[in-house]
Length: 500
Image (cartoon, rainbow, N blue to C red; front, side, top):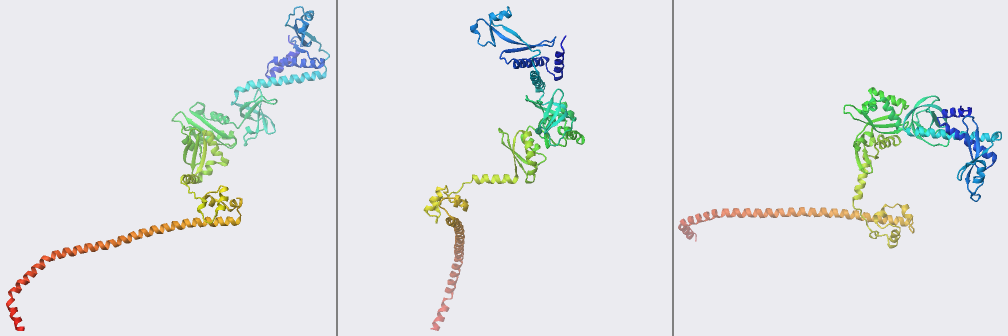
């Protein structure tokens, strides 16, 4: 029949959920420590509990050696001859157990020490039991009861153990009352030196996933699959779902009729906002969905290997796409697993302009081309790293005065010389334009002069042609006149003679 002490140990073991032998070993170790403290001995002490009588016997253990020369420590070793005086059956290498008297000599201090050792061993065994029980249940949802609040931490009773929920694992929207029943996620299990080793969470994405599986039958039976969840507890959650059945709308199934399903989950999370997004294999399409409610103009894959996207939105949609303190784009990036850069149309346009300007060849004019600077000033500027007129023009007066040997008057001189240089360039460009206009005007005038000459040549040709055409007619008239003169010849002759 077991003793009363052993029955007490057995009851304690069942209460703590640990092996009774662990408690027995703790009791035996406590007696050993108390005995060593009382005897002030360095011997190898052991203790053994008798289950029948409940008596704990302590004894010193010594190893048997053959000769006295082999005894290195009398507290730990004994010769074969001396050992056989106590137990004739001992051989070399065996152990001799020498009883130590403990009854009536271990006082109050020794008993208190034994009590502390027992409690420590039991706590260690309890922690090991809790660790082994819950290490394989990380990520599991359990029903817990609020047991107490210790500062910012909330302590839950989860059945066989206590769980601690620190501040970072809590939602800012939630507060708990003692005795309230809630669902928590087992976030991790720690081998803590004191206190509960199970860490619970209400901020983990697994909690939202479990709530959707509970509220949406299509998710529970596998028709609708949750592909990704991104959550910032107490603020917003984005969940990507897809349907394996083309006749089932994944988003509609999660929302429910008049939003009843998702509203039930929102109430459980104390009003946390939830965005339900349809999952797409294409990262570009998925990014457009994930950034809702903002409207995206276009999405470009910058680097597929590094998973980098560039999203361009309208200027009015930029703040909505980024979200409060960058929350919307941060959750979208976490949901996709891609890095997302968001830019407005104006920012993208300026970036393209800068890239085009960078691609254009940059003019560089040596300082020696500027008259009025002087060799000494050019050397000072060159020593400071300013070697071109363009770099000199971009510098402020304060930057120029920071150069050794250049003061305010010299700065005015430099400014005047640079202005004169650029003014001369502008004047030269203007003269070039005027010269080009003069050349074009001369070409027009030459064209006008050439035209009258051509017209005169054409006119002279026409006159010649008319004269050639009129020549036969004049010849015919002359021949007719000469014939008429011949016929009238005598009359005219007599008249002339009379006149004479």
